[in-house]
Length: 346
Image (cartoon, rainbow, N blue to C red; front, side):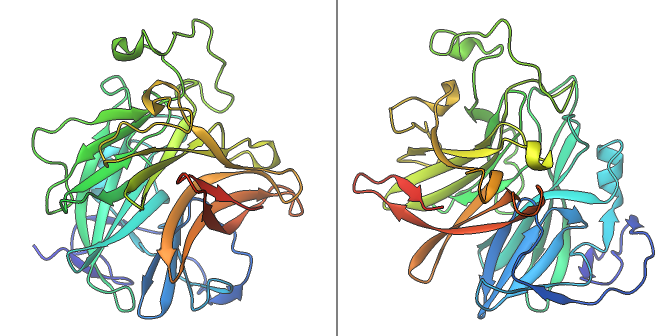
């Protein structure tokens, strides 16, 4: 069966089409309203992909003004997503994109808020300018009652041996890592392992290092996710180090959000990742990197980082103080300290 689809053509598999709506027109803005931004660069154009109905797509020539595309990246949603994730419809979360072996690979999250019955799907294409998106199916799923982790917030990273890995996760037992094969699916027989958490909930592995918390704080946003408030991993390689960025605390509450970004580093993609004080992120470590200043942003998180031109650029979404908590694109230049730690200006 031919599973290739044009960006605006129906998949040649069983799918569900987005609801009919009036024709949309592209528009240009210097203040994109976004959640969970990731960026790709091809032939002089920057492509911004963010959470939205079918994944929102924007382009820019200068990283200053953005043209918002009138149609989502996915004008149809594969039927397998609805079969795998009860309650999931069209609101696709937290994409990630990477160029590897002459192909763009884009992962996306299918879930419902506060639950870990979730799936990470995969698309691929040769070109972003004129994409023929391949539906590559599912990379990984999590099941309520079966898995103590959540299959959302994917991030691809390639190690020094050209081996692809998937980093992902939210709440439950924290950030997961698993090895991928050449099709960007999980290597047969591989099981994910935890590489970062806030504190110990039930893991025997960490009981001597990270004390149990018998009275953890209540999660204010979900009765199911638990209080291990860590998600949105992104690994960035710089000067022989791998830096694991994560988001702590709670997003998606406008001005009441308290999202913030923390970081640790390792000499290898597989970890362990230690913070600036040498504490392992598996056992609660992490050095605060970026948070709301209560002047520009009440909170900020879910980041991505890239080397573009001569700079390392940090992107995330921030809950704007002047815009009453609306979530907008944040972009900053990363400055590296003499001992190799990232810093950022507000």
